Image 1 (cartoon, helix red, strand yellow):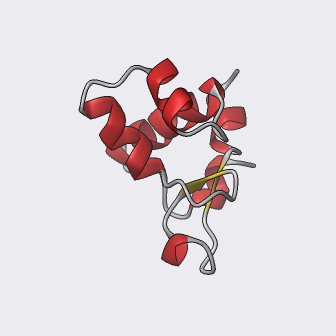
Image 2 (tube, one colour):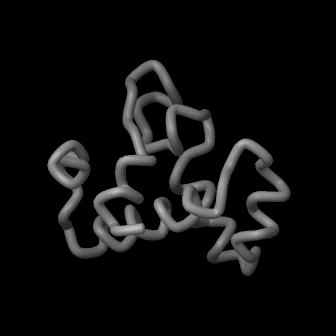
Length: 81
């Protein structure tokens, strides 16, 4: 799956998690996924812990984090078009 497709799984909505980037409209933020990866959890462990997530959601959070590191994510909508 290309980064553009992965990033379409990340959304921001002021009514969900105070507008923080979250996975597909869930209340699971990209930062929670990235923190879990940084803590040493595997993608499979994260999906087991958050059953509403799919492996591509974990990849999407990683792609989002990479885009932020490259300062490409302002605003998010430009990356998902």
